[in-house]
Picture 1 (cartoon, one colour):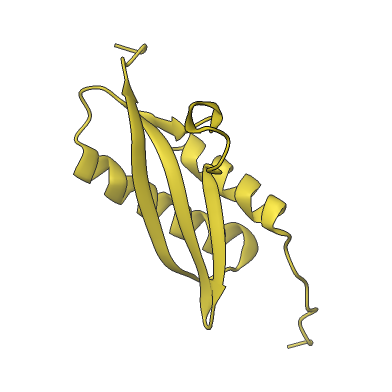
Picture 2 (cartoon, helix red, strand yellow; picture 1 turned 30 degrees about the vertical axis):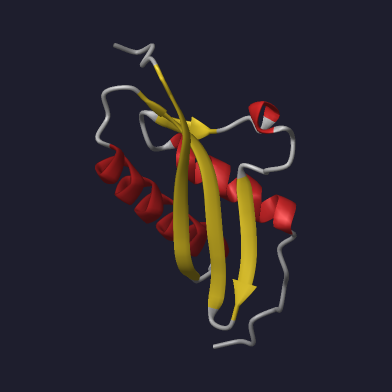
Length: 105
Protein backbone atom coordinates (compact mmCIF):
# COMPACT_ATOMS: atom_id res chain seq x y z
CA UNK A 1 0.00 0.00 0.00
CA UNK A 2 1.43 3.40 -1.01
CA UNK A 3 1.96 6.35 1.30
CA UNK A 4 -1.06 8.57 1.86
CA UNK A 5 -0.70 12.24 1.01
CA UNK A 6 -1.24 14.68 3.84
CA UNK A 7 -3.87 17.32 3.30
CA UNK A 8 -5.79 19.84 5.36
CA UNK A 9 -9.32 21.11 4.93
CA UNK A 10 -10.12 24.73 5.69
CA UNK A 11 -12.87 25.54 8.15
CA UNK A 12 -14.92 26.87 5.23
CA UNK A 13 -14.60 23.58 3.32
CA UNK A 14 -15.54 21.56 6.40
CA UNK A 15 -18.54 23.83 6.98
CA UNK A 16 -19.64 23.21 3.38
CA UNK A 17 -19.39 19.44 3.91
CA UNK A 18 -21.50 19.81 7.05
CA UNK A 19 -24.10 21.69 4.99
CA UNK A 20 -24.15 18.94 2.36
CA UNK A 21 -24.64 16.29 5.07
CA UNK A 22 -27.54 18.32 6.51
CA UNK A 23 -29.21 18.45 3.10
CA UNK A 24 -29.91 14.72 3.50
CA UNK A 25 -31.94 15.30 6.69
CA UNK A 26 -35.57 16.31 6.19
CA UNK A 27 -37.09 18.92 8.49
CA UNK A 28 -33.98 20.90 9.39
CA UNK A 29 -31.77 23.61 7.94
CA UNK A 30 -28.92 25.80 9.10
CA UNK A 31 -30.00 29.04 10.76
CA UNK A 32 -29.16 32.17 8.78
CA UNK A 33 -27.47 33.97 11.66
CA UNK A 34 -29.20 37.22 10.64
CA UNK A 35 -31.67 37.14 13.49
CA UNK A 36 -28.88 36.49 15.95
CA UNK A 37 -27.27 39.90 15.73
CA UNK A 38 -24.64 38.42 13.42
CA UNK A 39 -22.65 37.22 16.42
CA UNK A 40 -23.30 33.53 15.96
CA UNK A 41 -22.25 31.43 12.99
CA UNK A 42 -24.56 28.52 12.18
CA UNK A 43 -21.58 26.12 11.93
CA UNK A 44 -18.77 26.32 14.47
CA UNK A 45 -15.86 23.92 14.31
CA UNK A 46 -13.21 23.04 16.82
CA UNK A 47 -10.20 20.78 16.62
CA UNK A 48 -9.40 18.34 19.37
CA UNK A 49 -6.96 15.49 19.61
CA UNK A 50 -8.41 12.66 17.59
CA UNK A 51 -10.91 14.67 15.58
CA UNK A 52 -13.10 17.73 15.33
CA UNK A 53 -16.11 19.04 17.18
CA UNK A 54 -19.06 20.57 15.38
CA UNK A 55 -21.68 22.93 16.82
CA UNK A 56 -24.71 23.63 14.66
CA UNK A 57 -27.33 26.35 14.97
CA UNK A 58 -30.43 24.94 13.30
CA UNK A 59 -34.00 25.72 12.33
CA UNK A 60 -36.38 22.78 12.71
CA UNK A 61 -39.69 22.15 11.00
CA UNK A 62 -42.64 22.32 13.38
CA UNK A 63 -44.05 18.93 14.27
CA UNK A 64 -40.79 17.03 14.13
CA UNK A 65 -39.52 15.33 17.28
CA UNK A 66 -36.54 17.50 18.22
CA UNK A 67 -34.64 14.75 20.10
CA UNK A 68 -35.07 12.41 17.12
CA UNK A 69 -34.15 15.13 14.65
CA UNK A 70 -31.08 16.03 16.70
CA UNK A 71 -29.87 12.43 16.68
CA UNK A 72 -30.47 12.19 12.93
CA UNK A 73 -28.42 15.36 12.36
CA UNK A 74 -25.60 14.13 14.60
CA UNK A 75 -25.41 10.82 12.74
CA UNK A 76 -25.61 12.40 9.26
CA UNK A 77 -22.89 14.97 9.99
CA UNK A 78 -20.49 12.51 11.65
CA UNK A 79 -20.95 9.89 8.93
CA UNK A 80 -20.83 12.47 6.13
CA UNK A 81 -17.54 14.00 7.27
CA UNK A 82 -15.99 10.57 7.77
CA UNK A 83 -17.13 9.34 4.34
CA UNK A 84 -16.26 12.42 2.29
CA UNK A 85 -13.16 13.76 4.04
CA UNK A 86 -11.94 10.96 6.30
CA UNK A 87 -12.42 13.29 9.26
CA UNK A 88 -13.15 11.80 12.67
CA UNK A 89 -15.87 13.70 14.49
CA UNK A 90 -15.59 13.62 18.27
CA UNK A 91 -18.86 15.44 18.95
CA UNK A 92 -21.75 17.11 17.15
CA UNK A 93 -23.65 19.59 19.32
CA UNK A 94 -27.05 20.61 17.97
CA UNK A 95 -28.71 23.86 19.06
CA UNK A 96 -32.22 24.45 17.76
CA UNK A 97 -32.54 28.23 17.43
CA UNK A 98 -35.92 28.39 15.72
CA UNK A 99 -38.92 26.29 14.77
CA UNK A 100 -40.83 27.13 11.62
CA UNK A 101 -43.87 25.73 9.80
CA UNK A 102 -43.11 22.67 7.71
CA UNK A 103 -43.82 23.87 4.18
CA UNK A 104 -43.70 20.34 2.76
CA UNK A 105 -46.79 19.29 4.77
